[in-house]
Figure 1 (cartoon, rainbow, N blue to C red):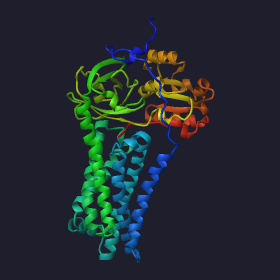
Figure 2: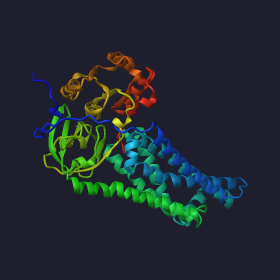
Figure 3: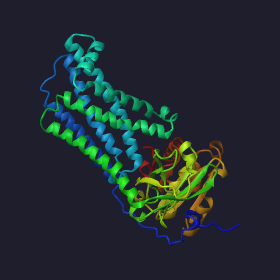
Figure 4: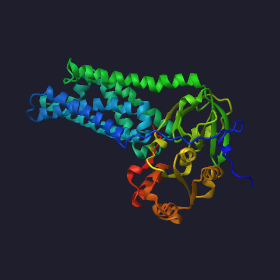
Length: 458
């Protein structure tokens, strides 16, 4: 049998080049996340200060309810553009905070937004009803049909509730990624519809600095979204002209897609990052799905490995060489930048091995890679990973079997890596298995700050 070769990570026509393992730039632990959260919190405090300045007193149940509605309405109006900014693909946030953290903040903030909108509706309707001396249903009809901009606001509210419903975990599991993604984009319409209502009926915004700040927040968000989510991908598409070079089977239902193009080094992609790809082929043209690099971005090619998990990923296997590709990215902080020491464990489950395959080749220090699978035939890149381990003197292990056969995951990993608690851990895999792995790692003494896990949902 021929010895494994690193050339498996390149298209067959690509020449071999020497690899250099760079030392990444290091950032203070947790500094930027704390600064980002502090900025968001300061904005919320500013909203409360705006209400406090314009509300000299509150007297009686009706006024308490009405003012509660105004506070929750202001906070909801502030939260909406902040949630959009978290997903605006701003390079600094994507690179330093990471897609996983941004997605978690976005999801948590979305739940707060739904709660704030719900409280706003209930308290405003009941407060006005008590003031006017009529029932809440009649008051609600009066508000919707006779207050300025309220029909638009009602539509915005229904969109927010609908988006919240399809974003719930139980609903997400039943929807195709593409369906959920485009339904989620309706939040842009909701924010636009709600903006006019906030200016027309937001008594606390007035005509002074509050209104100016509100315009700045919403228009600034629109500019950043338009630039980073529309203009930048279009400009990069024109400059790099990505196209499919080769589609190669890797295993049952798994293929690697090699992309080539012009001036790819200008993308400055790093191992562990991902792109959102739109393949310009029938049935794929309008779907933008996230795929991780499965090899270091060298040799003038980008390699992505795709598992058949639905209609989109299944169709990728049939792509022809020369197919044009639109790409957004690179995104994500699941890179060597997160490394704080020389020891690192890379733990991949299923197709989650793809970003770890690239990291294993380029991560400085002493990486150990463990690939977890139920069956030997589910393992990917076995020859490549063995070749990487041999070339750089690293260690590669395979953990095969059912949960019952493997037993406690933390104990199994500690047998393979005795000083596990002293390692940084890069973890990638399906959500449920990744959560189980985090619990197992924490149980054997790995600090949460040392566990790096990124999901590419939004």
